[in-house]
Length: 198
Image (cartoon, rainbow, N blue to C red):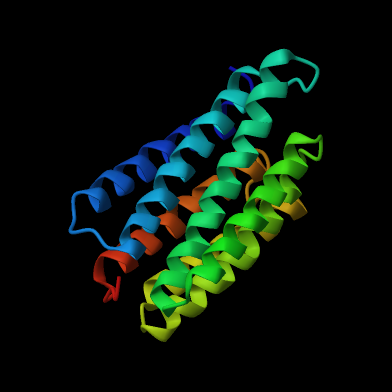
């Protein structure tokens, strides 16, 4: 296995996000709660694919990479769109906002599939969705979620900067995943305790 620390932390994220998606799916459903299930389910798919890429297909010139890496980014974009939909539902926005969110997500996905497969594209989709959801949760005083989303944004910035506090022990990508685990946990607990207007 290549990039073992990155792959294993990706797979740990997969397990965490899948567990969160299943836990939320068992609760009474509303429009926003379904969107949160999608956030965690698509994040589980993205991290599973990312783990496979980092662990077993890291070379960009291989067929496996050319299929799996764009699929990873598209899953991240999907999770970002689900975050924006959850925010729109919590804020009571109308259908036009949802159409706009889906349109923007499709544009990002089209960019990835046309060859712009840098991780920065996924971050560009994730950042505004995180800010929007943070605003929606903040309006409901769901501060754990706000902190989790802020941590996710910080983690992305540190990942792009190549920062890790222990460079000899853990790569910057694996450190990013560890921060994401905390961020997803905070978001999950916020979704369980925040009032939901459907």
